[in-house]
Image 1 (cartoon, one colour):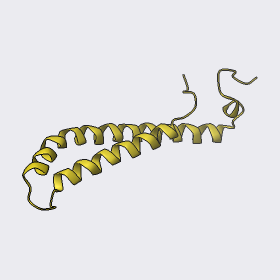
Image 2: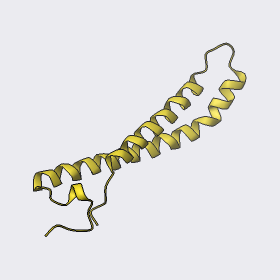
Image 3: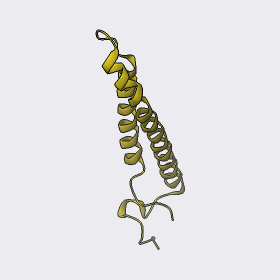
Length: 91
C-alpha cells in the first residue's frame, strides 16, 4: 500500500526513482548552502563596495561588481536549490 503522506507523484516510485529523487534533493540542499555562503560574502562586501562607490574615480569599481555578482549568485543558487528540493521530505 502506498504511503498516503507523500504527494501523488511520489507514492509509487521504483527504488531507482527514489534514489534519483534523494540525489536531486541532496543537490538542492548543497545549492542552498552555497547560496547562504554567497549571501554572507555579499553582505561582507557591502562595506568595501560602499567605499568603492564613494571614492573610486571613473567607472572602475571592482568591489561593487564583486558584491553584485555574489548577490546574483546567492539568489540564483538559492532559487534553483529550492526548486530541486520541492516535494515532501523523507521524514
